[in-house]
Each structure stands twice: as structure tokens, then as C-alpha cells.
Image (cartoon, rainbow, N blue to C red; front, side):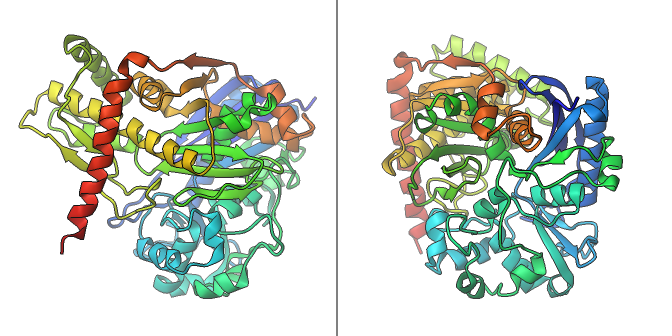
Length: 526
């Protein structure tokens, strides 16, 4: 009986697979690394065949651990970072790299090579920008596509398919060139609430009048939770499954996490008073609403990017976990930022805070925009700021710096939530998922700095769960996305803000906003 689901998540450095039952219980999970190439500053590239091989390895390992047969799997779903894959007319890899290496056919999501193109498109004033926060980030696909056409004309000339990474995976799985409504609405300036969704005048303005042909883009999109068909024979062999398995349209990884984290509120009609924080290398804030609420610097609103008849809006930080890793790596008392070293630092911070009465490094202040500000400033040119550095090179000095970086990340989340409130969003609870749930400092700060009740879903992987929910609908195990949310949701553990700490963090926030103003003053000096 086909009553189980496989979910695959492609992150920045690894592929993960999970096997779930129809109630949302994770039976097994496996992980396999993927390679990244950094040929020059602001360039980051993957090999899509390496990604597919890693996904297949993870699926086989998870299936073996779950001790299930292929005939027990109803459907498979994929989520991925918003990386960009380029293929020729026969489906073979095309280089996206200045090195010319054919296997480097994928621009990683956080690659910022197209920052100039993003600036140009943002300055166009075209109305599609009303549905991307009034500007474009170099992390979105249109700037990257414009860069590819202008800088790698040979690859562009030979192109026959260009995919968001999640759509590439479903293409590999089925042979279907269908595109998910989630990916193209959120990252390609496709307007899912209008017909036609592709705006020809915008593509011409961007210098991409031939995009639909070169990327092999269909006019329509596949709704999340629908089925793209069954696994092909080759894909079934690669994955260790069979051709009876349905394939769901792909998801942006953060949106899969948002759906997994917000499944409870979605099933209890509390969706519009809840927001998801998906914390990892970067951080994403995701909210759903029945009506479009536009806001500058917020990505969206995107119609039906996940849920039917709902709009999705996203804010975020381009560097969160990546900032903490960077601090550990660059400090003389640090080293390779392993989970063990992070844990050692966090444990020491607890002792130092106890000794200092909680007031640890009060004169050290940080703006966390080391990789630009995604929200609420929509400024990829912004850079991090540190005020109050000393000559301390000790391990305790690293711990103090790490602590204040954590505070700055939480202050940045508060800044995003304040902006969203100004655009009409109202939140009572912050549902946190992703790698940050393993950092007790961040969980504490998200509650105390924002003043929100923090809910942590009691599942080991809300991103995989969200993808599994969509696959369960595609496989016929549940009748709708809302039914899947109701049946498969995880219980949650709440953390309330500590009112005794509010005044101190309010002062930190005022300093945070002042530092932003001072940064702009410095940039304005000719």
C-alpha cells in the first residue's frame, strides 16, 4: 500500500532526504554533501549533476533506514534553494562560470555577481516590482539571467532550459519541463494572479525578450500540491524507487519550512496572526495573508506561492548563521565553525552572562549586514558595522563578540517585523524552524528582543515536513494542503518573552537604528 512520502531538501552545502508516514511522522532521514565552487569574489557555483547524485544517495539511505519498499511510497517532493541551473537544448549542462567549466552549471542562491543588474532592474520602475517589494535582489533570478546573457553569450546562445533548482529536480525526476508556481512567482517576476503571467514588456526592458525560448518556460505554472506525473524509469532507478511514485511541484526551501512551521495555525485559521522564521545560513521571515499587502523591501506579495488563494510575503537576512560561522572562523581564538565549537562558545557565554548579571559586552554594538541587507532596507550594498572592538583576542573575547552578533541578528529580525507591521501585518507568534532551533541563544533572543511568543515545532525538520505535506497531496494521501496541514502538523513548544529584559533590548534597538543612520551618513560623505 502506497501510504508513505519521500521529501528531499537541497540546501547550500548538502542534500537531505526524509521518509514520512501520512501522519507526518519522520521515520528516517539522511544527508549527503554537495560541492561548491568559488571561482572569484561574489561568485558561487554548483554542479547540478552532483546535486542530483547527492539527492539520490540521500533518498536511498533514508529508505534503507526506514526499511520500506519502493511500492510503499506514494509520492516524492523536492524543495531547494533558489539557485539557477542552465542546460542546453538536449538537456546537457551549460557553464554559468567565468572559468568555462561545463559542470559548473548552477549559480548558487547567495551569489551576488548580478548586483549591478539588480540595481538596473530596480531602477526601471516597472509594475512587476510592486510584487517584489519595489526592487530586486541579486539573489533573485532575473538579475542573474541578465548577467548570464550579457557576460556568457555562448552559454546563452546554446541554452534550451534554465531552471530554478527545485524545478530542475522535478525535471530530472519526470522529464517534464513544468515549472512550479512557487518558484517562478517568487523568483522570476511571474505574476500568478494575472493572465498572462509573463510580462513581455518587462522581459524586453530587461533585455530578456528571448527568455521564454532560451529557458524553455511554459506559459502556465503547476500549483503546489498538484502532481507532475510519475517518476521516469531512469529517475526511479537513480532514486531507488519505482515508477508508481507521483512527483509534486517543487518548492523554495524557505517556503517549505514556512508551511511546515505554520501547519498548526493554517489548520486552526490562525494563519494571519502567525509568522515563520526559517533560520539557517540566512534567515527568512514568511507570512501568509488572504489579501495582498505590498511593502517596500519585502519580497512579494506572491499569489499562491504555496497555499491556494493566499498571498505570501518574505523578509530576511542574507547572513545569519553564516555570520556566526564567519565570526568563529575569523577570530584568533576561533577555528573551523563546527557544531562542537559553536556549542562550546554558547556554553561559555552562559557562564559569562551569569557572572555579568546578564549584561555581557554592553558597549559592543553590531550591524549584521556583512552580506548586504535584504530586509527591510533592500540594500545589497550595505555592509556590517562593529562599534566597541578592543584588543581582546581571548576565547572569552570571542564569546562576547559572538553573543553580540546573536543580539544583532535578533535586532535585525525585530527591524523586519516592525516594517511588516507598518504594511498591515499583525503577529502574535513567531514560529521558528531551521538550524537556529539548535542555538538556545537565538531562541531566547527572538522572544525577548521581538516581544513575540516563540513557537518551536516539535519536529526534527520542518522544511522536510512542509515538502512532505505537499507530496502527500500530490500522492492522494490528503485531499488538500490544508487537510495535509491538519493531519501532519507537529506539536509546538512555546517560549514567552522575559519582560525583565525588555528595557535593555529596547535600548539596544535604538542604538541599532542609530547605527543604521550613521552608516548612511558615512556613505553620503563624498
